[in-house]
Image: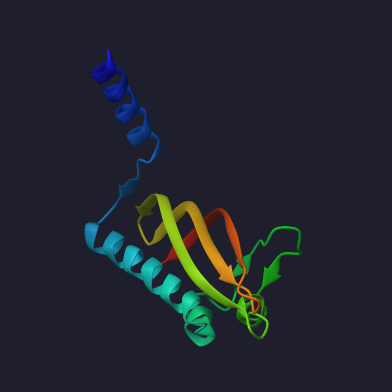
Length: 133
């Protein structure tokens, strides 16, 4: 009975973490590479690289705030106050679907911010990205 329960646990836990990637593998690999690079830029406070990840007409939808439009406003959103540092940032795509010249990527993100006093703040959320080649 223990083995049966364990197998059921594995089945359900693996189905909860499944990813669906549809499209040209080369394009999917590029998107996955960009995702990793973005997280590195966030952890390094490389605001120029963060800004380059967005188009000039990009929009982001931060919690409890107005929709931010354009590269300049988005970069300003990512700039941390003095003494704060993003210790950890990870993006976990749930689905990437490439259709013609467009791609849709959605999933979850998580991070840890280190405060000047040494305490940490954990955060997470959901995202959707629409890309055009």
